[in-house]
Image 1 (spheres, rainbow, N blue to C red):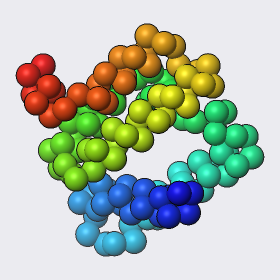
Image 2 (image 1 turned 90 degrees about the vertical axis):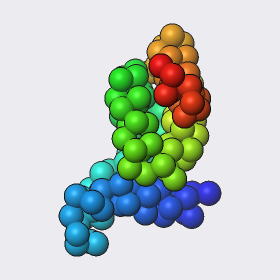
Image 3 (image 1 turned 90 degrees about the horizontal axis):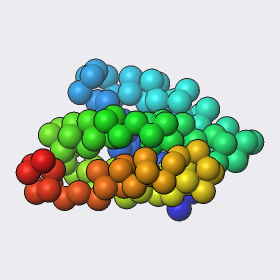
Image 4 (image 1 turned 45 degrees about the vertical axis):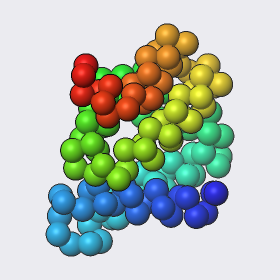
Length: 120
C-alpha cells in the first residue's frame, strides 16, 4: 500500500494539475515539495501530527468544492477522493484534531452520491 498507492496518488494529483500546463513535468515539479514535506513529516512526526489540509482544519466548504471540481473535471477520481477523505476524517479524529460534529459533517459530504449532491 505505502509504495504503490503513493505512486498512484502522485499520478492522480498530477492529472488534476495537468490542464494548468501542457508540459508533463510541471505538475510534478509543483507537487514535489508538497509531497516530500508530507512524507518526511509523516515519517518523523507521525501521521497524526503531520496531517494538514481542509479535513483536519474542519473546512467542509473546501471539501465540498473539491468534490464538485473533481465531479466536473475528473469524475474518475471522485471515489478515490471520497474514500481517502473518509480515512483522513478517521485519522484526524484519532489525533483529537477534528471535532465529532465537524467530522460527521465532512463524512456526510464525502459519503453523498452524485444524485444526493445534485438534489442539494
